[in-house]
Image (cartoon, rainbow, N blue to C red; front, side):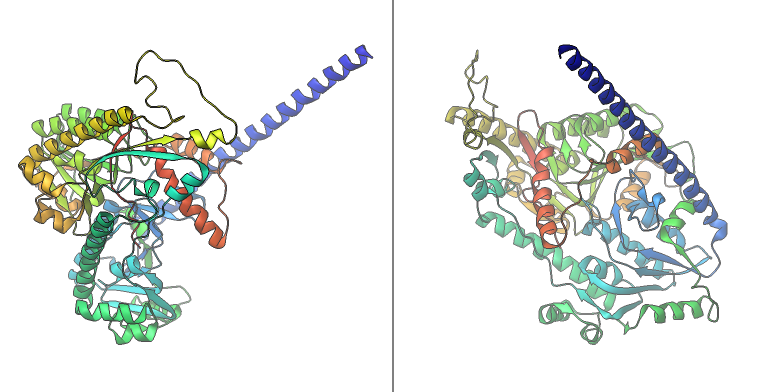
Length: 611
């Protein structure tokens, strides 16, 4: 019996090993096939892009700008668009604006057609970026070329950009959903108390309200005050731009918005928000006639904006051996090197040291689209930027967000540009500590410890902080805030008292920030680059280099495998349940970026997902 059992174990181990080998072989084969498919897709995609290159664009074509994209500041990382026509494409803001300006003087391009609806993701397609897109479309229109928009179900972002068009068409079954801006915050304090999780907070700045979702069940008066003021400023800027584009009074637009809510086609036309109501096929037929294909079975002459971006070379940026570097600080600021889509303190500090020592780089433009994050990381980056600015000018261009740590890294620069819709300021600091003693205690989990110093275990999450420990953490927060104030005062050449007056963690719109001295000039990334070129005498010609550089194919394949391998991702539930699940996951995901070594953060006091 013992021999039989031994034989059975041998057979069992043999079959287990064989099964494991087969599984490994299947996984390897799948990865090899996937790698082959990706490489083949890339080759086919490159071939298709060459085919749709400069020589393939017919004279009289319309540039079709499909808004169903996510517009980021930094060069895109993983481009999944090559794997299928239905993939959402990510476009880089500067590539979009440069292409639109080039198309304005391209004899092959007769006009622009806007269609689709924005699909924002992360910090992409924010109102600061969209204002730059809108301004580029305005320049195209001023070149005496038409901009036309066909809308179906348009939200505020879509209509804001489309309102610059010469002709706006709304589908008979469509509508404009532009009810105004709103901010809704989710609070976890009640749930935390119910399940035995405790949050202990240290902060400076009465408006520094980022921690409120973990300590309150509603908005504080200060939080409500600053958020209302910010939304009013942003909405006023949007209405001003829309009114200018449509030749409408702001009060008339507001009246329509408040009366209709969901603005249906007839109401939109009567209010002057659209020029006509027509079906897609009618718009296409009109464009066919305009581009010389009235009786053709083909559609109108066209080239997609994405293909046009890939095909054209901007003659304004020739290689003269002198360069201006654009550094994109987009995402949460985190300690260490960070991941793609994050601003790693170590990575960006090293990058600025390299740029400072590179004699070929004559000026640096820092593009900030960040709500902040780790105070330690932000201070490390700020120091390197300050040192670089002493050697060569560092010009800051603020995107949709440049707040808290995002403002800290911008303060000590030569000049700061922002859009009126930029969210900035938030000069304040907070610390947040977690305690799961009650939660784990309910499952019978206990902790015990030995230590050699009074504060040796102060950073544990297994118990609440003592009053003395909280006092230590508060001193660190106060000191960090003092450093923040001093850095802004020195960089902006203000008195400490003046900075403290406008700080307190308060958030400002770009226009308000200019009035109080936190911003120098209204303008976008192109204006910042032009200013930098003029500052160092390169207005006649220069080359732009961008950091971080686009990922290599090997890095992209690795990221792709991580995204689509079985078990690597779980699809959210559908319908309302899915929306709730996605919202909660998004709210809690921010905690994963909380990696400051001392638990102190300079971050936007609220996650302003403005819709």
